[in-house]
Figure 1: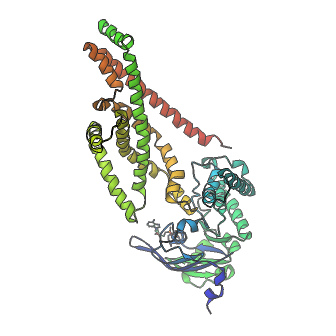
Figure 2: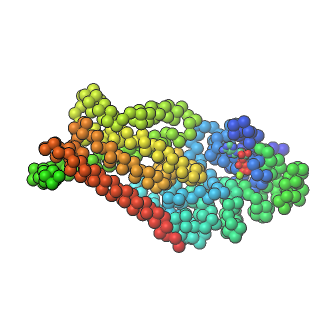
Length: 261
Length: 235
Ligand SMILES: Nc1ncnc2c1ncn2[C@@H]1O[C@H](COP(=O)(O)OP(=O)(O)O)[C@@H](O)[C@H]1O
Ligand SMILES: [Mg+2]
């Protein structure tokens, strides 16, 4: 049985034999993963096993050394593709939020969408119209997370939880096909973890395709439809959440779970 | 001493010396201001060449070119650069350009070599996560640098840029080598009228000192405004 060909229409990102080394250290040793439209995949694993590197390779923030990443009919690992176009459709949320400190919240959200809209400008559309449209969209997103009153605030005045929620809607404002999260709650004070996870749950319920590196096992179990255990540069085990936690097969996963659960 | 003071006053006010002084002051400020603007533009471009990842061949070639440029302008005296520009390069090119324009261009080129180092430090002072966030949103490297990283680095290096401006103001005192009448030249002419240099040169020094202090004050005020603009919407 070939699962790949069965669901090929639905496969949004197809990663094959992805390899990445830093100097002599081989960090990714051939990773294979299919991300189907609407899927929520949680990636767990010990620190340093290559989770961030994997996520960063998917949108080529790190250039892969080998393998392929098929997305919308093109191989992102091929240095010849225009990666910027594809990145517009792959949202990314970082552990450290990475808001633009020189821009207020509204400009943080609208900067990239305005640039893209200007490039794809329709006839007769003025720059002012483009800006207003994107700002309106940004306000709607801000209202959804209850932060519309922060539109003119600068990042340095926000709490960690607020920053991360704005980083999430900044990515959403590009209308991405998939969202990648790299430990989105790890840099937060404990009391702020909840608000960020709630927003991510809402996204998941709205049908967003998500790949989430996380240490929040409870969250992964609740939201993900597939959980992946990464270890030493490979995917060591993947399964639906119930199976994954109830019947882990790899001894290293058993050991890992015994530590984190 | 009193006679010298009186002679100075007569040259300055009655014999029209003040006109040269005002024009000289204007020339000094013009050369420094436009030189710094050109310097910031060139310095930013050089700094970007320096920090851009060097996977491809073009950035590597550019880096070599930039190294030669910076090496030349930091390795030779400003006066020599002025002389080369005005008496060698211009005749070679066969074009006639006002000497103050030459001074502005040479000061700009020279300043670019210094500003590039300042700017590089500024760029590196902005955490790389913001660059990555820009790239992850699909913005090009250049766009992300221009909209996100460079504005923040300029803010971070504002005091150092202020110092560069002060350095330029002081260095303009050599532009009379290529026949620009600047502040220094204007006062030298006043002194030359009676071969009495004590008063004109002391006053000249004071004028530079006041100019430099005013600039330092201005930089402080701009800095404070920058800081405030981020704090304004704190609620
Ligand atoms: N830019 C880099 N340069 C060199 N080594 C790196 C770099 N990024 C990650 N590494 C190394 O790769 C390994 C995997 O890192 P990472 O993907 O961040 O792990 P994880 O996210 O699972 O904790 C680590 O040993 C780390 O030190
Ligand atoms: Mg990590």
